Amino acid sequence: MLLGRPNAGKSTLLNALLKSKLSIVSPKPQTTRHRILGILDGDGFQACLVDTPGLIENPKDPLQNCLRRQAMGAAHEDPDVMVLVVEPTAPTEALLREFSALNRTGKPVLLVLNKADLPGDHDRVLQAYADAVKPAAAFKVSALKKEGVAGLLKKIVELLPASPPFYEPGQYTDRYERFFAAEIVREAVCDLYCEEIPHATAVVIERFREVPDAPDQIHAVLYVERETQKGIVIGKGGKALRKLQDQAHQGIVDFLGRPADLELWVKVRKNWRKDPRSLKEFGYLP
Ligand code: GDP
Ligand code: MG
Image 1 (tube, rainbow, N blue to C red):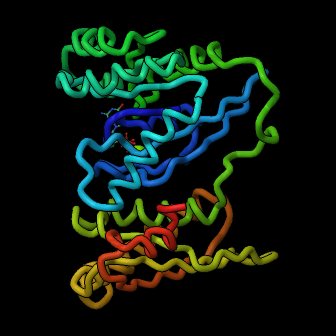
Image 2: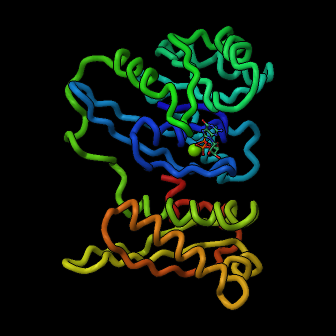
């Protein structure tokens, strides 16, 4: 299970461990809204990797509250190994206190200093975290450059208890392709628009139909909170929306490895982030 502050590089690391793109990655914090389960079948082992939304310090709205609950709840779900991902910048006392609670679960913690490709006093930062967390082992990696990842994976596998495989070998993930289609659209939104839009956006796949000998038909609705946001998403003469559509379409085809048609609609759902019914409908609440 991967834990850490938003933007530490958890999703990037998950993808590096899985050697393919599964979780969505974005320079804007809080991109990962759902926990994503990736399954890695190796030589004589199976590892189920769970990405969590980052631990948000002061949740500001009901959506952030859900995310924080999901992330914290994950630590109580009895993972075999916890992988704590941190950045190469000096931690605050408060953060060290929060992370030191992790070893009370009695499960091994692997400390991962990510972004080791960036400049900084990596050894000192790693030591500060290690003093608080008392990890079973510590690693310096660059998830982005896929450096140091093999050593980490080896250690994870060592720490896994012997048990029969949980999932059918070869099963890639327990989430449906439609879920990834939605995440890919949201990733494109994070990429193409400024801060306000990504935070106010939810994507729902209303239809995902596999058609024999023809492209999949995917029908996505992008919900924003206000008319003005809808205007921004669509842009002058629909230009921005076309760009979004192109990028999302390409991402989905790459992910599926087969042709697909993507239809994209923009709708307004007033203040959905504060509305329990919408949060439920969009999959953020059980
Ligand atoms: P998460 O919020 O912890 O899941 O973080 P993400 O995986 O979404 O990554 C956040 C940002 O950090 C993205 O812009 C990544 O490209 C960047 N990033 C992740 N890993 C590395 C790394 O090893 N080196 C550098 N320089 N950037 C990284
Ligand atoms: Mg993430």
